[in-house]
Image (cartoon, rainbow over all chains, first blue to last red; front, side, top):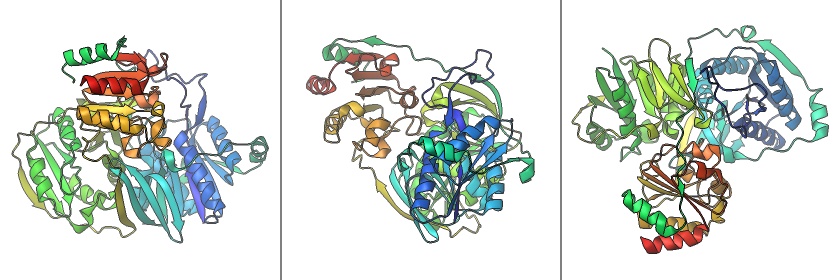
Length: 248
Length: 312
């Protein structure tokens, strides 16, 4: 059984994002880039499923410019077996991304596709669900526990009301949430080893995926800032202030 | 005629408050009609509640035993069958809507606008990106718009409507590849729902333990408040996941938000920036939460809670 994992290169989660003054987007030059944290959890989960003897191969794939190969190498260093880079300099949105992953799935025939539940740049939270729809596969989103038993997966999902358990037939798409696992640290010898692992490059056209109408970003601005308030010196002062506002 | 269809979120008995917020967003579109669809196993009670939301024209009730629990793979094909009559299909951007709507959109070959926070025109919307550190104005392509509504950006529509309820049968073949097993509730008890509460008391890593969270619950009960938490507190096992507030948890907009022992990571602040008044109590005077707090108090949180309880 193969597992396909999607990873995305995003601005590192520790970076304070700056919006460009001309409204054209956010500053990316000279900013630290990393693997989307949710995707790192997806890679880790795939490796654990393989290590438990429930899969033979873990394939990681990304869509984006040349620099994304850095994140593929990180995933290979974590332990993935091989990587696919769908190279494009265009911004790829969830619907096209899902169509690309559908084409990769048709080619590779994985039994499980693991994706992060959302990318922390566009915060869309769409790709896994769209891929489930396009493949007519079951989806189990926001996973905090995944159990593979033969041809089914039992997934505990983090939902607003608590924890929901779904059982899905494989093949299935699973999107992962924060508490599924803690990704392993990559060791130096693994980084060296990862350099020799296979990394295949292809274009969107190679996969036969055609352009579809997508969402146009007209402008990007900084949000209205909350004004910093005041420091109070005592609980009594706080209570008076809140009472004045009719809040307590 | 342009009409918008809003997908009702409910638990089989009660309509979730996020639905009336999504209707508010739908009203801003200024279209000819707003319909709400209730997909349920036995949904007449929920449909009656939906009919009372001001601004709603029709409530469609689609009953099917498969709709007993909200499983996206079952609901999506039914919504797709209904979508042909509409120019817009919206759902709240809760875990319900987030799970469901992209599946609907992709089947219909449409992109989705996630987390709509403002309607500029029928196809142009504002939405937060980068954990709310930037706001993007986006334009959906011509034709059907599929979107989710950032509920914290909208007040719930009033409860003074009298829409008609119409039972609809939707003939679609549902997949057999997915089975609902169970829903384990996080155990908020009788406290107000975090996303609807007008007051929220929230705890972070500084609370220190699951045991210590009883002080947070106790203050919340005194105030009639919901209970929230930072990711750190949930990760540490102090409190169940459904209390998490932030970029990847719940986005809330209470009138009063009181943060105890929460440092204020940008991911957490993304979940509370629409709160009316933010109060922060933290031992660390440099905690970033103070940059957004209306009232900050540098102090031991347990002493403050004790004093607060006496003062209330």
